[in-house]
Image (cartoon, rainbow, N blue to C red; front, side, top):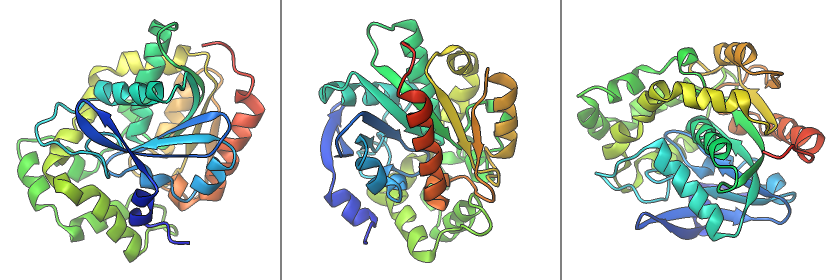
Length: 296
């Protein structure tokens, strides 16, 4: 089956946020499920688990603004708060008042903001039935950013983004995966296409600012995980050099009654590297714990 970005785009729709076009994949029937992707990729990250998910859920998977097939305005004030606004508006426009959430990487941070909002304004925010997080920087002290990420935050960031090459991308991106699950040449070409289309390299230094937000708003976002009554599960690939085994240990230390599933020999993209393992962990979690959630 051809599941490349071109097919993914052809089967999607357009929404709008802040006056800009936003790409959305939506399919399936059943309980609503929101998928939130990470940096610097897109909703296409979910393509290997998509068929099974839409057989069980009504799945909504946007490209956040600045990513994938969504608009990439050059001077837009990108922030986690605006991405959370985008997600809330998208669900509201579809009449979705409650949903399960599966998030990855930067999507974990957006999910943490959504959980914080729900705690603060339970009557005004959509209900999160369950929250399953894949590898991501949920505790800033346990993140090990790559050199390219650190450089993008410096004054050299705008220039670095413009000269960032396919060769450099292939090397740094592949290193995020487990030793036996690295992407093929064709897959790397597809990821590069999604990152760089419509001038994506020119805004990488703006998108990466969420790393600073994680530090600034750590207390708010960690407290949301610690105090929510929403069922939580963390599914982690321990070979991830950015947010793998160390993040899992920190999760055990900070989260009451931690529910952690470790996928052996897997890196930063579990849903790509081990789709069957992610599906087992997620579906078991939803069916066993989250179908009877407490009111959040």
